[in-house]
Length: 141
Image (cartoon, rainbow, N blue to C red; front, side):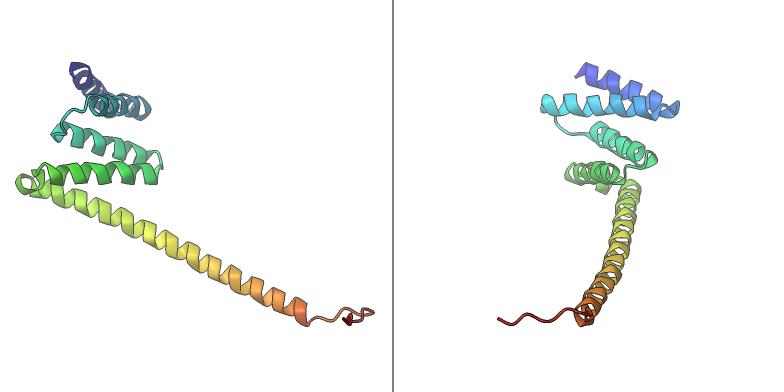
């Protein structure tokens, strides 16, 4: 457990120094040790998950960030920390909603793109069926 505390401290210092890759590795090791030892979740666990999520976000790993933030928020709620820290709860909730809205907007864009492609494909197939190839006769069965 003391190793995990040192990893949290070192990871936080690396994060503040801008060494995000190193920070993520140290903080991820903190999470691994806590999970392996079945250590009871606390505010430190929430903070580390949130920080790892932020690092993923900065590195462009949106899905990984979302997973970390979601788990952090869930543990935050389970521990009853939201009642004593309403501002933090509000920020976390807002962050998750914004990310979900971005994801939904991207999915809608992809779906619209797929619909256009699908319509074009259908139109192309229809044109091929209607097109008569000169010199070819239909086979009779």
